[in-house]
Image (tube, rainbow, N blue to C red; front, side, top):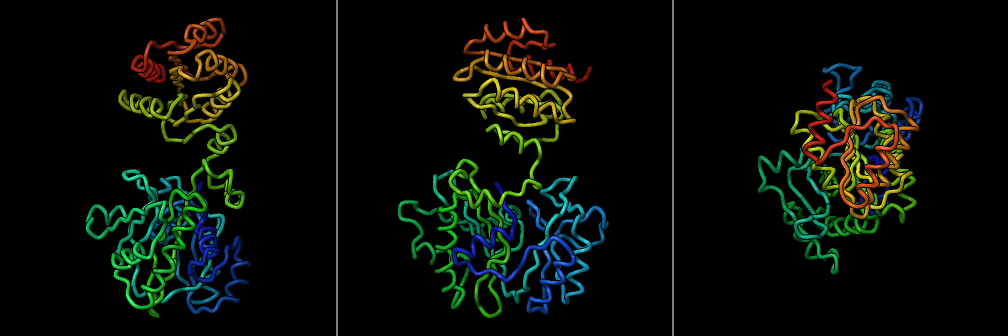
Length: 397
């Protein structure tokens, strides 16, 4: 689960991280009211969407020459004008795709006198099975570009989860970021704070880009991006309360209600599979035969008929779907349960596109019999390769 920048900053500030004063606003009237209360003379107006690259993004409604989704203002009047330009319009960044995201809220904060911009993140380094700091002196840039062009400027430090964050770890990060004097003292305080927030709140990513050294020599978290492990949210009601459903795909929201692993994609073949690996293989073979998957959907190993029915309804609700491929290998998941779910779903929502079903494994004969005895118009497949070829051929007429 992702949250907005202003929410991430509030969370980090509650742990003691230094941030600028700021407020989330939803109208030009609010913006004027709060800007008058801020010290000025420099303000920053930031679009709040769940996507990176906001500063370089463009609003569909304002044209290519307009400023991006993060803007400086030097008066209350300029703040209000920026808010009017941005609020309710669609911001397109390299992470949103061409469709963009509508900006429904903005964040106005005090400006900062920046001396240096740094990069810092904490994530799970799966190569060593530990949380790790990833830092660079090249802040404010895409870390992917830094990794590609100047990888020597990226420093990675895995943290022993049994020992936790130590002073020695903090000093290593200070050296990697070339922090001295007051900034180094701030680093010794800040890095353990960020690590504590990351571990206590079950984050999957904590990114500060940029982390700045101000002209007075102090550190400040200037931007913050935080994602949480969805499997741990049940123990964080305070984090769940931050969820912004307007930033999520309607189909993904519905899938989460049924504990389905679903990700919407841009293709035209809907997929329902059990097991993440098999789902990835299914999407790969669809691409191999010249088409694109419309989704990743893993119904899991212990799905019920009701869960399968819900999954099928989510797939058919996508107007881009021109055909559906059900690929089930029954281990824990029984083929007859899948078959019953497919038949029930077709009865509930109808079937307007070709449907290819490949079943194999536990109770496969029962599953095939259930489908054969129904009046559902299904194209049977013998194996995954056969299934992929048949669904591609079917949608091409």
